Length: 451
Ligand SMILES: *Cc1c(COP(=O)(O)O)cnc(C)c1O
View 1 (cartoon, rainbow, N blue to C red):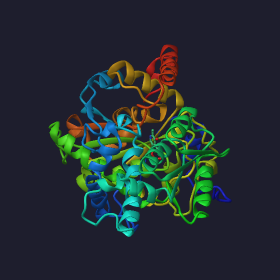
View 2 (view 1 turned 45 degrees about the vertical axis):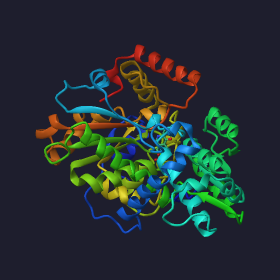
View 3 (view 1 turned 90 degrees about the horizontal axis):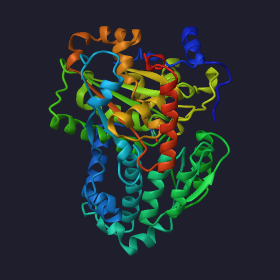
View 4 (view 1 turned 90 degrees about the vertical axis):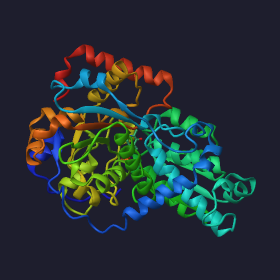
């Protein structure tokens, strides 16, 4: 996409760290700045929460997997003491580790469920309202009627994706009767394409990277008078849907007896691709907990798009290609060269920092998680696992803790590692991931891979 003609002005030392492809923790100097005016606020998050709530009956009727939760799209918050014991580089005096299990979100199998479902539901509602099929305050169950399906069949819903967003949008759109079209980059996994096709979704493959798939999808959808394009790089509806997750987490923390305040900090570690999902969640958490929550993104060493955008400190788009990286990683869900221009200005003021992860760390992390907790993930979804160690056992982490006066209260901390995808991955693929993790663990001591 839009590559800048000249190299961005990143400090030489940072450029060197990026180009070495060695994992490191970068602290965001803009944390705490005033939020820019983007048109996204809490009103949009409230609206998304209300929409998902009034569509719960509809969701429960469309998907048997959602019947148990009565249509709520929620994942468990798991206390992961065994993982903490297996991974933590310091004796357990640095707080308590949890996993937020979005890898197991029903139907979509990833963190993309909330945002993706929300945007398709918003489209379906607006068409049905316009056609008089429902009233503003009615229950949304009629959106599953034969009449609604016939109406939606006139529309095409398209999206560009490395895989998981396509799954979320494609499955929801097809379930409602829309013509669904998913544009995939060449790094998208074969099984994701197969699963979508089995559910009646049209999959269009593109040679280039994620941005190329998005651009092609956007162009084709806009050429269709009944086309609707879900724009992962610019969508406020996706963002607001993702942000709703923050309220679910807050309720789960309270239920687990975890306080969040000045003496009980909350640290959240989120894998980042284009930035929509982790950005929405960060935005939602900051609104609830302010300075008491500290959000860190995890990005592959080859694809740290949010890191370079924030470090460049400008509005002009900067990509990982601009700093000499190739965006090639086993973390297909995070293989994004350029951060969302909607989300990055918000994160410039709200994000604590970004740590990068090597592919080897991803495999070791998913192996450790499976061994210690029986949780199976795809590589992208394990990117947050090194987070607590970066904070508590690296020089940059200590710098952060010191600057914010947190060393004194670290023993009260809650660490939430957001696991973002994997429950739909075929067993054979999962076994291949585990074998790779085992191979790497056997080869070298863990200390060589983690701070
Ligand atoms: C998409 C995705 C992410 C990150 O979400 P973005 O909105 O692209 O930043 C993280 N993990 C997995 C498994 C994903 O599919």
